[in-house]
Figure 1 (cartoon, rainbow, N blue to C red):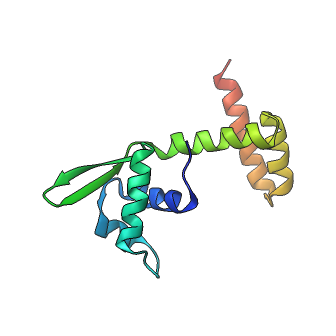
Figure 2: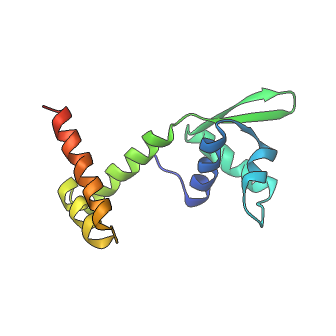
Length: 122
């Protein structure tokens, strides 16, 4: 299951804060700040999707992520590779290196990462 753009923006804030009350989440948004009801609706939907949960303290709720950022990002990238690149990491890498403005140094850094990964799998 994935997040909408608005949910993903809120999740980014929650990942950064690790746990937060509603007021902390709203404060983290740039101006114009969203309404409390908007954030409450997003949190409810994200809770229904099992992305967040909360601990109740009296009338306040402290929210925390149930999904790690790395796990979510990995699933999103793998889904993109499957849907847009015929499930081929090589096609994705080819597109990525050709269509982004990577400097020669960034390409060298990528090459080093790949070489290190190959060495670790031997």
